Image: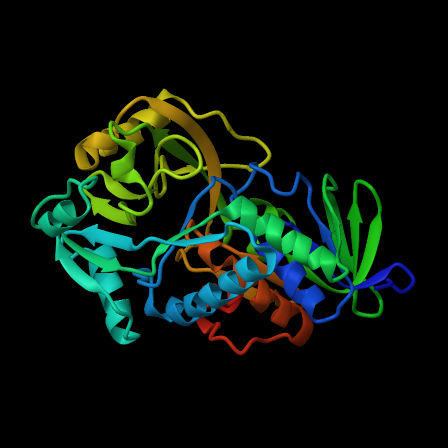
Length: 380
């Protein structure tokens, strides 16, 4: 595929989870694509790393996400089949909390509205079936057998290589400095290495998106997060075949976690870990003892057999919208610019379908998927 006069059909800023999938879907349509990533591919500076990321059909955040997650599953399977990479693991998911809590009640509602096979379990039944858990007996949980995890680094590599195989030009270690509309309605993107001209632009730069689009200022807010891996007393109890991924609402907050996979340790994190809004270019990336204590205390209480020595700590970022729902739209004054932002800590599982959706928005200005709840004008 040749690029005519150094002009591309679409430029994609950010080649992480969302951007790599977008570059693939654009290239798969036969378009000339350039993807620009300021760090490595993959990298651990943003929101698309961490070895395991939850995927689940039971969606307590809102039933409107279910059509997107159904499509996401199909696309993840397609990518795994094409690349042969270790991308998706279906091991089951648990969404648990008090009976009137949104995590349990919302998951149950989504399953019922969309006829998703599921079981409702008491905390005591969860503990008996999956011995690594120690939930309060009177809690309720939705168990859904198709839940599990995505391996984000493998997903990004898979989409990047598949995009390259279709002719996409992917450039890492190249920072976008600004962009502007051209006289003919396209865009000119300036980086620290050169200038690229394209008919359309996709902003998939995660926590940095608000620095590239004024319309996202105050609507896509980066937040510092921390993760921990603790070594279980009996690692076999927390193996993927024995231990579903989980979301848990408790008095200490809302937490999520994973079985042992690929590296030592039971992994968990807390939504809105310490409520730290940050500048993605200037914050403390080093996890500390206070971060560890928040995660260890909850592990000791609800997963006590997993609360062994610390194996690893890490930080990442959420990018939160005001209502914690995604932003998938074109910019109001620049219809040739599509944005994917504000994924609010629950976006990676959708990366496969978000890439397809951003490709739709960049090329057609619309998508067949229901996107009304993700529009920018909802904040007006």
